[in-house]
Length: 318
Image (cartoon, rainbow, N blue to C red):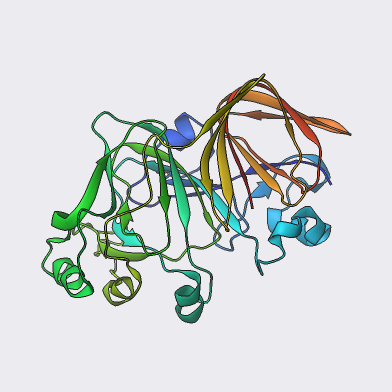
């Protein structure tokens, strides 16, 4: 086994921009690059290995060869690869939406639910997003406001800044606003219930479908209780600092500001390292891998790696 450098799948949703191509160097023959699935075993867009003996294979294909040992003991409770990590460029605002929890999604969609974390990589001045409600309401008011187009009157609009963090449990109403670039760490799911799309037309010239009944079923219609924004304990070390972004029974994510060296060995989980700025070199017994801005590395469980350089990184595991 060895650290895998991954090439992402890109999506061209209508609200996307071009920064994933111009700023991060991702290649696409489409004008719009809305999302880059930088760590993915999902059937809708698996990552592809670009280094070493498995170059050209997808990440799921390599993990099938390596077996459970590459994932680590913490993954034994998951009957599927647990994480999906994206970079999202919202040139326009996304629809107001919600994701189901595991129980509802398995029953109705045939896949697991979706809890996620957003880290604001960059944003335009004055950018904002929707995070839950600005007051507690009931299901009846929620459904009525969807149907009479007054939902945004009770949405919690949050001005955002670079480095802000939002933990979005399944059932939390949310929407990324225009002019925001986000790193998203989430459960390995692609189930979304859209409740408002501002009357926008899809690529086929028709309004994109809404999922009102299912959204009403799963949405938590209370004000958010989890702290958000410039949150997360920061610990310094000789080669930089680590900021805690999210930690739950599904995943753990940290932001590493590196200016020196950092040792990685997660005995019980694989590790994902995403480079948001700068560059670094991963050294291990048998070789090195260079990671630049936009680079994504999968490190097998219980694998010793030293990472050195000057870079801003997102570190995730389960």
